[in-house]
Length: 432
Image (cartoon, rainbow, N blue to C red; front, side):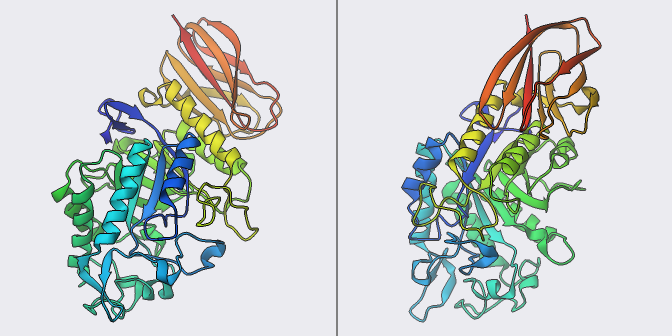
């Protein structure tokens, strides 16, 4: 897998450009031995999605963290599979990669490949609490080497004594996975979550260089911010810029970097499909190339995604949202979105309060998305002269409806939206 040469904001796999759309478990599929990988991946494939995310095991959570019930990232102690070998005294030897862990990682990637699913492997994670760092195999009280900081905020410093062991882990993973065409390696999850909201970029650069030195064709991702940020620079060899809980400006304002831009985690917006569906549509139609919904329907006891949601859960998971995301994926593939670009500037005027996103292959086809549930709206779009078919898309109902053929003389075309109780999208397709 690599970036699409004709439009580097999208990936290409097996000679075909693609969008990556996922809704998956809370990243514990590899490190949690109780989790049934086969049933999980089969369920993701049946839902019509093609993207999952997993953590390596350098970071784990305690049961109940963040209010997550049956958290796959919080395995029972005797079911935790770490990346490093554990000795008779219960200490982890950071110089020895655990062969059982590597076997499970490769098995997961291989199964995903059979289901035509791409996998983002996240190697490290920010320590949200000191107790989380104290549970990591890398902590000096848990490792055979007994090195590294006791303070969680210093783990990813560029001169950390843990650096050689971190580099070894990422290089072994990259070497073992470099021949798979369905893998992305993400350096670190939410590294900006420290109190000053900065990233440990010098440490990141060393990890990126370590991966690239052994697997130059393997896509590398970095996670830069929650919601949005106009980033100043992008390190060499980075293919994917990840945001969490992204808003459209994350894609639009970083488009100039010529990299794939991803919304890599959702949550904290209630327990219904609507806000996460709207997030996905808005992000993709603003120029995003990947989307990964954190789906709490997947647990150890429910690897096929049918777990009932507990009120404490900080997000949503369900077949309705998965079906809606599959409809979004199919729509983007149908219009070959990888040959389009953001063009909000053609929306010259609209009546009503809306945050419409527009993409187009100028003069050929356009897609627009309106997240607000306004009863009806009047829109003016500046497009070249020609005959266009107007098609309405109903993202919640997963339906499309051909509305009219427009003979446009040039300048601005007026579009009156139908009554809609939820979000709405439409296509304008040039007829030759």
